[in-house]
Length: 292
Image 1: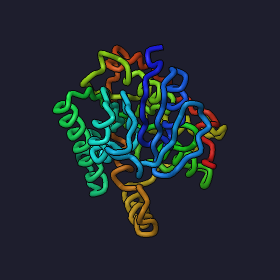
Image 2: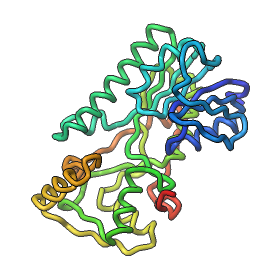
Image 3: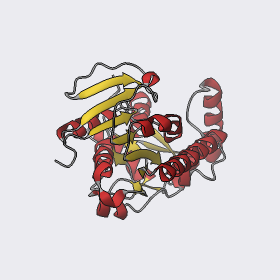
Image 4: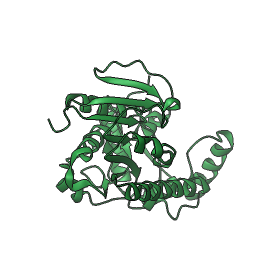
């Protein structure tokens, strides 16, 4: 196998994509170092789990390829350690939000965009100055196994209230990306010679309206779609009240307004260089289950 006997490291290994990526790397014969904020009991052969608090220049193994599933803006604090490990390539997952939320009226979303852009620039500048190959994978909304905050959040709302509110016709186009398809692309980005020093947009196979996306979530839950059009002013009042009641909530009116904004990308470069082959959007009951 291409990756056999290569040692790799994964930052943010406990997230939605982490377990899938670790299993794929194990199948390829890699030695794996998995880092997360807390200790983890490893159930996958050849994976050594370690807390990120122990990750430093004086305490790092030799690693050839690093995969960052954690927010890209935290990666710069570990780059000195990555360099000390003798890394040849760093693959980092970013987000297409750096483009789609540029004009957001929400200060929190503006901060996220800035962090994404700054994180990407810091990685590229560091890699180029140190002779390390970099690959950036920007994703659209990710879903899978009931653990995501996108499709999973919609399913949770439907379970609780039995309907879903829409602003207007909800005609904005979407391309939901399954976590397994992302994991496969991340692995391919670790070895593909053509991917060196490149960024890719990753998204699902279909372009479907926000309304159709919600309808398919209902269908995946074996429920008849119940969609309710809500006036602009009511949505604004509800979001404002929710933000006061739940200050840590990620819900914003910008999210609501984007129901009618296209958020689609061309992933043909990833098909060519990474063998990327995303699925159509047909979430299963497993994708829509309540998180344990």
